[in-house]
Image (spheres, rainbow, N blue to C red):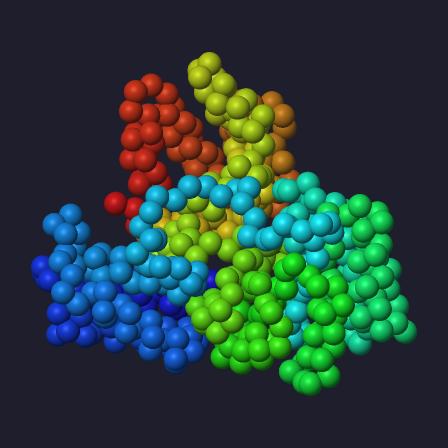
Length: 465
């Protein structure tokens, strides 16, 4: 996600050296690099011009603190302005301490139930899938009783698709038919939600391949009929400049309250993330980060800015751990280490499974700071394909072999390799990697354990210093 933008901006740190105060001359090259990076990422030209002007204004005359390099100081200014651009807030306020917002939800529920959420956007932007993902998030994390309804009577199988998603995520579905009028469907669904005590009604509307008057008139009529408390504009991050034009048209037709930015996981440019907030004047509330039904995240401008600049997104990583890691199993493992019992292949397998619950290695690396992420990418044993092969090798071991790795001699290794469909060399590599991990776990015991473990990781992961 946003890889090319991250790579371009990462080079800026190296271009500013030995400056104690920023001037027009010494930041000219850095500003040009930022401008080119944003344009290459498909950020709209008016947005880029305004952004560069604000960065220049903040930077000129600013003193470089002794604790920072000139590059770090400049990137700090860019970071704050990125947050302001995506959130619409004051960049000066972005330096305030931040806390985890695992339970925070950027939706307004201050209304008599049901709170109605209207999904708007072009066909193919991911409205229907996002409606299902949002329903799941509201049900699972916020214990809301949700009703889904489709007012899309034009796209083949749209109603059936939403019905399937509702069943998949375990929420109620209000049946509709292509012979009905979209406004009638929405009004009937609202009445049903009221009489059946639903907390939230999510209405999926029809999209078109392009903006047209009929489409806009229809969604405007639905909005007037049900008066939603939230009108979310769903936009595909891969649309680039088209996303900006679509956003402008919808914001002029509907009183939007927020944006859902989809397909951020599949886009190397992602300029829509930086443009759409500026164009609509409404905050990006959610981001689609994978095709899975749990792949919808609350959008945090400060975290996205950190990821764009290669600083990682540690808060989101912590929240992923809180949501997905089996606390009971993790405590068992911790207690095992404290008691002095060794780390075995069953423990290793459990760690792989926990990582998969968090979206796999790619999702993890996306939230790591650039230096750690590059180091991890440089280690072939950490690739997701290798993780699956590793689990296959462990599954080919007997329970006794997993508990007592010392038993793994030549004949057993050949049997395990044959069972997993790999070579004996791959089994040997896994054992060597496992032994390194065992050493790291031993380092965790006693005083200074974490520091010792980090030194051990440097040896395991090429590129870490």
